[in-house]
Length: 404
Picture 1 (tube, rainbow, N blue to C red):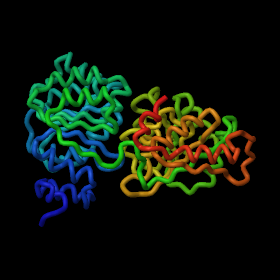
Picture 2 (picture 1 turned 180 degrees about the horizontal axis):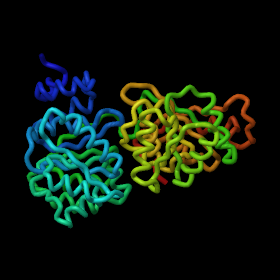
Picture 3 (picture 1 turned 90 degrees about the horizontal axis):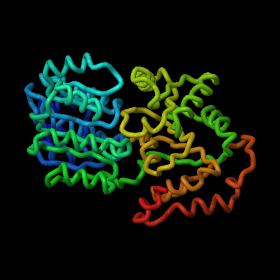
Picture 4 (picture 1 turned 45 degrees about the vertical axis):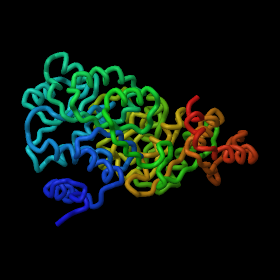
């Protein structure tokens, strides 16, 4: 019997395995990408977070590889967390095949990675730096790569990985299929795409600068000295399943986490100074419900598969409007609703306006009844009205207004 996934060209066995995992209908990115990838054509894909992008390339890749052989598929990810998630997804999707999947990333020893590479793998998820180490040591070769996936490429640009990515791409056969996923396409990335891809199909789901329609937004004006008190009151007055709190700095994340723990909350912390074991424990604890709150820097803003986040709170307004969209994309995923609260101080007003211009919508300013606010110009009615009115600008100006 044909299913929604077999109608896209997936084999009955793979479509059944997907159905067994609870997938009923393909998401738009899956419906448009899977048939293209199955044909072997290059692809540029963009979609909002939480739309099933990993399955959009993993499922057709598994079908194309079919059975165990050489190392034929490489997926490059900017962070170890993303690489771990992709490897986990491939393991699940490929469980009814004899395909072998592994992962290499920094921050841990080489032992198991060397052992897996020697044993022979079909699919490799990797971060650029550690993969280059393995290539230089002769632990693996990319000579047989048939399919190359460059995922979260704009994030790789932000982290300075594009030179490493170019070095890796040059080590793969020119005849490969290349799949390129990015939320935005600035000139540096457009240049990489034109160099790495051949006649690609393009799949674009939604406006690149828009936030998910399932998310409700609110800005909470407050003076800097009262931010934590307001955060604490928000947590007390909000019915939440799980909350993800973003800060700009690693020290800020640690400080907020310690203060929340002192108030009786169960809290995990994620930032780049935490060890890999600590980061995995924080993410797993948050996913399982052991931690009700996860405090993180923007390392958790892009791509992390965290289902069921009911609220995102921006303790610090991000300087880059794109990062706001990525942060709040952790909630309101897969057609669920979510709330995004942002604490806005006088120093944040310009960044808050940039976010509104970027998204093309005004965000409601809210005050909590009974909170002993210290007076600020933030609460001047005229100023609030002007701020909200400044939000809706022509879309063609949004990208120019987003960065300072």
